[in-house]
Amino acid sequence: MSELPVTEADLQAHADGRLPEERRAAVEAWLAARPEEAERVAAYRRLAQEVRGAYETMLSEPVPARLAQAASRRRPWRRAAAAAGWLALGVAIGAPAGWQLRPERTITQAAPDNMLIARRAAIAHATYSPEVRHPVEVGADDEQHLVAWLSKRLGVKVRAPKLDEAGMSLVGGRLLPGENGPVAQFMYQSQNGRRLTLYVRTEASRNRETAFRYARENNVGVFYWIDREIGYALASADLSKDELLRLANLVYKNLEP
Image (tube, rainbow, N blue to C red; front, top):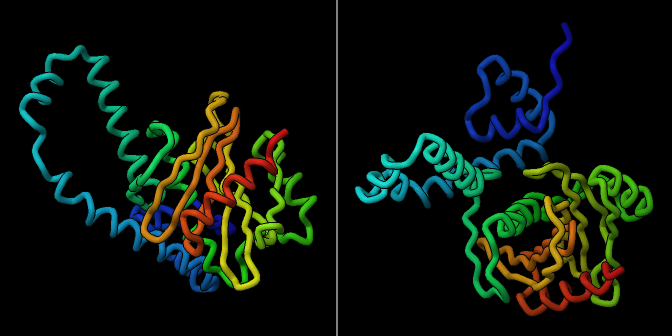
């Protein structure tokens, strides 16, 4: 019987310490032959340790008596809904590998679901922007194929904005897993090596509110917004907040119909 291929789910489970014993040897052998992937999994593990440290004290605290009493008076279906809500919150806090998002200044109040795009974009940027040999799956020299491929996978027409006037050239892009389906990431780089990534995902509902919101996680700044059926998040660890805002405006203008 041939060995099962190693999947992204296997790698995530390995990073979280949830990989079944019977799969561990195969996954570790696969990683040993791929140093770049091994480093990515190690980065996920480090992030998971950081978020556990950040929330360990809070999670060990007892539930306040008034909340416990209120929960006990709820109907069974309400208790189930509350449990599902806490489960969703846990996924939002920990996915993937659990980054704590700290919004700084926002133009309008962001709903938790909208804030998740900033967290995901920051993680994706931190994972792939340091890559030297494999920063993208498809390079800028094959941009037409890249855009067509990502558009097909996301089910909407996506574009790689032109940022040359701001000194940022397209490096290429890749397909990423998202909480609701495939996600696109475009990467840009300046002549002195500073990098910027644009994270693009489809939204469950159309939203005409396009105000920019800003968040920062560790050293990664993110401007994010939702325009109709597509959510965007522009992330960089190399650019200042003002530089990132100017580029966010340029991206928005490039993507206008």
